[in-house]
Length: 293
Image (tube, rainbow, N blue to C red; front, side):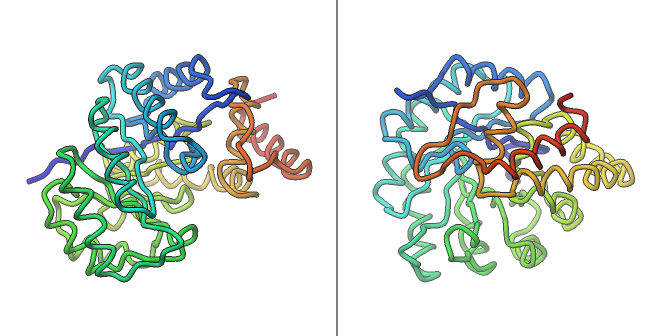
């Protein structure tokens, strides 16, 4: 029986940038804020962390910094996906070498691989490392779905232990096909409880960047049988989530982290700053939530 890499809320943490690179001092503060607020795992250099804009040396250095800063207090899961299988393997091996506890590997984008190609892609990555891998199925960004039958085949590979699933309609099929020792995590903040109700283990979350304690508590309450308490928290977050996704992620959440008083900097091009009307919406919802005055 394979154990989950984590149960609860993992933050897909933003990467603070300066004009010259990563702002490691600010990243350390964000990591400490997450750990002190109950976050169950740190996902570094994923979509929200803008990994697609990071050169390999910066990408791996940032993973290494997160591993050293966290210092085994919670798992560190490194985003190492690519639409080039060889590149994904290189990143995955490098992340393992600097101490990552697990990997998050996104569906290849743009190439539009077949299901056979997806299986081979992920199998080759899994064969190249020993640490656990979480598949990342996000059709809205990749225009490609990992079908449940393909996930079932991949789940038979020892170190492919979970999926971050953004296709809510197939969660039940994945759970049925893959069994209890394969974990399913919600990839959408507005559908954490639906995924948990179908047997999920938690969420890899954007909103946890600014409400880590509530995101952790939502999952914890549900798994402990306090469904009413979990539902109350999920409903409470919905308007805030709408503001956090008023533009493409991570544009709004980096603005939100800055509004909290941390230094997240701006997104790297081609992502730009949040439009003024969406910034006002975000500020309004953060005030309503009690995050800022």
